[in-house]
Length: 137
Image (cartoon, rainbow, N blue to C red; front, side):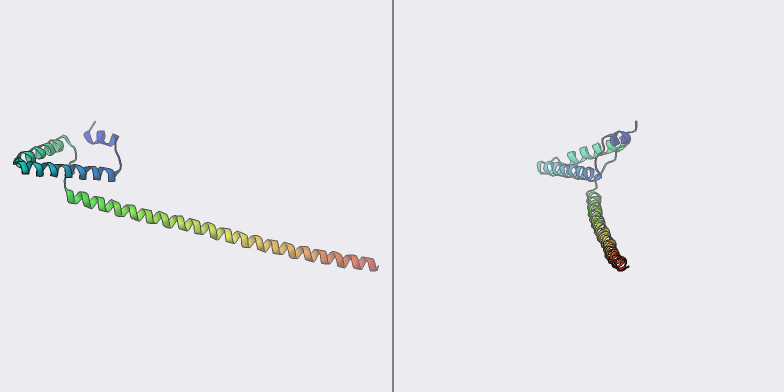
């Protein structure tokens, strides 16, 4: 099984992977600074470079460019904000459409009730008129 396929078995969110890569990159930078302070900065740099080269030779992807990682993180944040805004708009639209349908339903029910009431009044008037006419005969 290729190495990348092995990695995809236990995959997480893209944002999480970017944060992990940024954290690893920061830890490496701290190690280099500590080593430079103690006088063995070149050794540590070479060691880290060798580890990255071995990973690349095995087919692993090495994400060590801090600028690109930050840019990817920013892009994901913007995308998340955009989708959140879109979802909120959709929720509002659905809520508004439900309200519109409800008001229209109430109006239509009111119209039919009004027609029924008018018909009932006319029917009673007609019955009264018929009773009066039949009494006269």
